[in-house]
Image 1 (cartoon, rainbow, N blue to C red):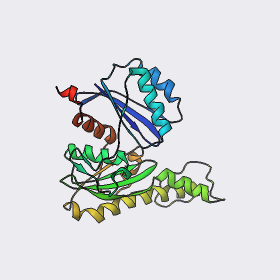
Image 2: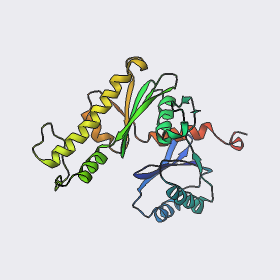
Image 3: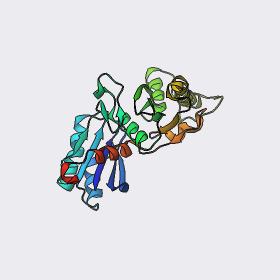
Image 4: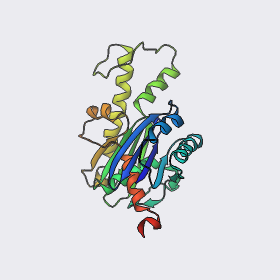
Length: 252
């Protein structure tokens, strides 16, 4: 069994992989006492043979999780860093390590699952968009603030925009709370649709469009196109990477 770790900007997600199946899984926000929560939960889990992680957070949080892994299972964590090429996917970046490993692993999942050519959108703290062709070549992508970060940026830069409640997405808002929410969510939806328009021909005309991330369920109904919701794409891509890069002792 392999313990997979996805250290995202908002939370830590993890799963225990047995063969091709996630037999255990969990998640904690970074505001939790991670060391205590993981120790409490993992004490009842079967011991993995390996631990593989992907991280877009700072070294301090990586270290805290690695220490928790060592305490619970007496294992080191192997951290996946974004490569130029792996698992059939070729990175478009001239400096490959500057592409977020979460984006790369989502493309690994898409390619392994037969969804290429595809546009991969992920909406959370940031909105990321990537184009992946049928041969596994990453053509590039866009990055923008996610809807909630957009709203926070407006609130932080203005003196009088102070809604008293969370807003709802409406076609024509008649108050500040709904106006702010509607503008930010619809801006992200429009950006996804525009990206698909720009890259569709390079992807054969009718790419699969997938949507992941913590806010995918909210954004999906606002898009012009039908999209496929793909939760846990990073964990799934990490599972492909872990199986592909099995130690020699596992293969012998």
